[in-house]
Structures are given as C-alpha cells and as structure tokens.
Image (cartoon, rainbow, N blue to C red; front, side, top):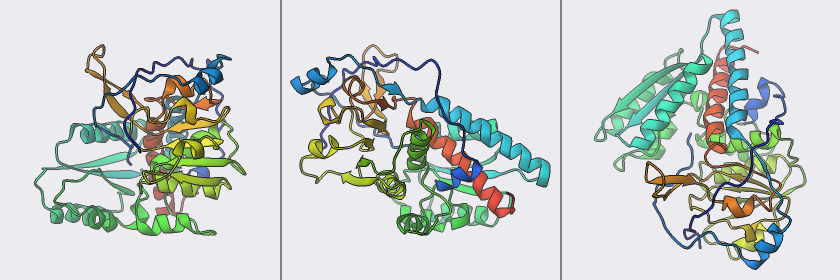
Length: 355
C-alpha cells in the first residue's frame, strides 16, 4: 500500500517574509516534549501528476504558509543558549551530551557531525565515541556504562541504526533513564502513553513536530489528526503527543484500508513513512496543516549530487490545498536537533536542581 510515488514536485510555495513564530512559553515547555526519519531507497516512478479532484482544489491558486523549521530551530537554539549561560553563571555547570557512533555510515556520520556543531553553538559540551563496524555489543555497553556514571554527561545518544550483529533494544535500554535524551527508554514511552504521568523525555522528532504546531499557533485541541506511520521513533509517540493535546487521533499504516479517505478527514497530518511523495493532493483536506517528517533521496540528474531530497507528501500538490506545510528539507529536520539540545538542557537542570 505504501508503494513509492514519483517525484516531479517543484517547490512553488513561497516563504513568508515575516516569520510569525510565537515566543517560547518558557523553558519548561520543552519538557513536554534522535533521530531524523530517513529513507535511503532511491526510487523512480510516475510523475507527481494531479487528479481532476486535485486540479479542482488547485484552481483557486492558493498557497500554503510554509512552516519554516529552520527559522524556528534557530530561535529555539538562541533560547537554549541563553538558559545555558544563565545556568553556568549561577552554578558553574555546563550541560554535556555524549554521542556513540558505531560503523562508518556516511549519513550517520553526518548526523553526528551536525549534532556536535549544534552543541557547540549553544554551549553544550559534546563527548564523541566512534567505534568500528565490527565492534562488539559489549564495547558499546561499556561506554554507555561509563557515561551513565559520569556526572559531567547529562545526555547519552546512541546513533541509529546499529550494525546488524548488535541488539538495539539491549543497547538503548542500557542508557539510564535520567540521561535518555532520545526518549527511547520504555519507561519514558510508557509514561507518555499514560494519563497523568510525565515522561522525563519525549523522542526528539515528534517533540519537534508538536513544537512547530505550537510556535505557528496551530490549535490542536478538538481537532482530527492523522499520523501516517507507526514507528517507535516517530509515529507512535507523535500520536500519543497529539492525544495528550486533546486531538482525536487516527494512525494510518501499511495494513490500513482506504488510507486516502482517512487522511482526507484530518485537520492535522503528520507523515513519517519514508516513501517519497506517497501522500498526494487528493489525500489532503482543504485548509489542513501538514507536518512532513520524511526525508527521501530521489534521482535528479540536474543536482550535483545526482539526487535531491523530498518528503512523504507531494509538496507541489499539497501546498495548494493545505493552509500550512513543512518543506523538505528545512522543516522537521532542524527541529529534531533543536529538541535534542532542549532535552539535554532539561536533563542538566534536573540533575543540578536548577530552575
């Protein structure tokens, strides 16, 4: 059902010249809250053509507001930097984030490099461990144990995916919950799922999705929301977060019948399936808000790299029907790293009883 859709979607939505971003509600808002969802299957299929239904919806030539995650993330990083400076002046403590990278995947190395730069930009001290592809699971666990015991390290991130010979669940569960800034510990997810319980951390990508809705003043309470995809990293926690905000939530997945009809009922759509341009204009309810988590490379002979990145949603079609939409790249991706920094700051404040 979630077969690849093709891509000839050009970006015809124009960036709003004045970004209307709401100021942060306070640093504690971050507590309501890594991994960027990414698909590296290179696909090609039929062009992103419009059906008659979509053509009719496009006739008005409306243009959705771009939800500019890059600009929002910049604002959030500035807020975090201010808080870290205040904390350092009051306590002398500087938050620390440890990242463990296993193997030589170029995409993982890029993510780790970007996270390190982001830490430096806000004043978080980063600790990096790079292990060979054939390293043992025990070696990874040894480093995790060391970071668990190190008071200068407030957050521990194990870059995924891990090599196939390692048990991902065992490794992620070894990170102590107080330093689980990725929010993957079963206790954190369990608390997220329960009413009147608060997780210490929420997974960074879904947290970033909700923060974008907040910052753009999108009302969630009482709205119909559809999450496309049910991964532990994005889909399920995103659905739980929307439910906490009093939305009525449906989850569309690979076994869902009539996904187009279900999605078309949504006021808010969060898509995280890793299939380029799967969600077409005909799936979109006029005036809805689209958060596109997908980052998919598709062949493009005109690009110096030979490919370009697109989302799960056909941007060309959806942007003429939705009221607001995230671009790819520049939408959810920058928010994921910003939320990782937010979680690390929250961990440091909690560990040092700093308000």
